[in-house]
Length: 217
Image 1 (cartoon, rainbow, N blue to C red):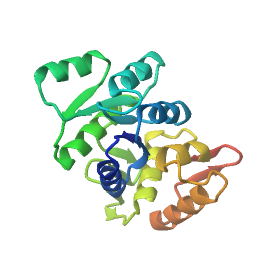
Image 2 (image 1 turned 90 degrees about the vertical axis):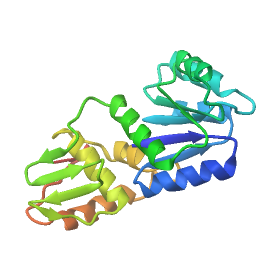
Image 3 (image 1 turned 180 degrees about the vertical axis):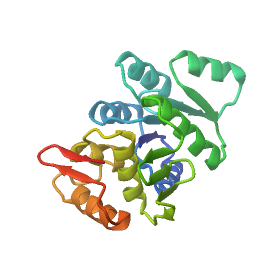
Image 4 (image 1 turned 60 degrees about the vertical axis):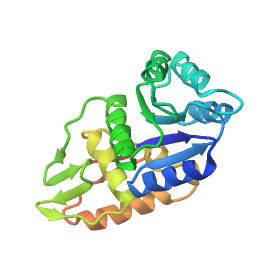
């Protein structure tokens, strides 16, 4: 999945982003409301983690703009206040979930994953394709009972391909969904990652290259 973290507290935002990346999540950062909206217009995020008290453009206005614009991203609003009235107000603006600071990182990850599932068509909690079995919540992948030692990006690519249920997934979509904005769109990043993933999956090969279209299982 791909997440946008919006918080004017730079150190906190970078800490959260670093933790999410270790969970295999692609993360972009914005430190003010206007930048957040610009990035949301360009990139297809699954979840926007949105601080409420932002400079320039308040988080409430950012949330309302995302909803008005028809963004498919789910909004998790953060605030230093945990009062019920604040929670109600945030949800009334169109936020999908609400978390008060300070928060437990494990809870933040769980809420982000839950929101991301709601942003996509319903899928089973464990993805299965032939001998392949992938559990996104436990971050485990197996083939014929053999555990696969996958990097976060390899895991993300395999998850996207399995979620597509046999449909072709373009290299551009893989790049957008599994990497952040620092990825070079003209690089061989996706091709190299798929190649490494194929080696780890073993024989017979299960990832097919569809010429000029992308990849599918």
